[in-house]
Image (cartoon, helix red, strand yellow):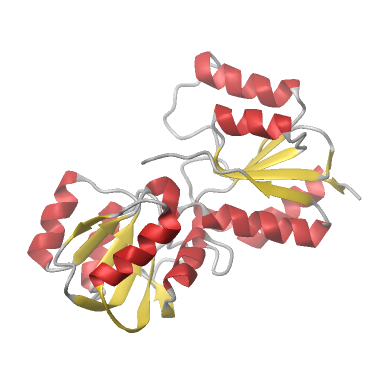
Length: 253
């Protein structure tokens, strides 16, 4: 049986504790479509290609990590923004987007899922004093050569990650934060990490890694954030008996 849209939104908002976060965008229901949801499509970003794929799947709602209405973006509904909104409204499809709350969830979040893929143990928040912290730190079950870890990351990311450091060295204490969190490298250094993993890299990051003696790995913003939205979509499908399909629109960044 279909679930009422508002019931689905309330459950997800509470599950991810969205009120706890000061974010760069609204979390939850961003565009309202039909009142009942049976088919749910999930993806990383609500780009036009994902919207069109969802239309083909006859989706009632789309669930993403990167939605719309970002702080500081231009307000007029023109061009790309108009086309995207027109697609949703024409086909009566709802858009649900969860940014930092989905990064941070301890079981379904991007960081939790990435840590599970890495086999991390003794996982703790990278910043334990921040209730809305999104980065994690933990240990590999045993020391591993960085080269071996890079091979594992390449397999699940679908791309060879950028690495700063000697791949023949061994590491055990690893910090990570998915997406564009290269600026957290200082926190990783302060926490005593041997290696810091994120999605993107900036020019200063390389120098920080070299001078602080920490391995740095950038495995791709999109590639590191595929897994939270899949886990959340699977949870909602099981909770409400929905049809769910994750659609991966590749992005090399």
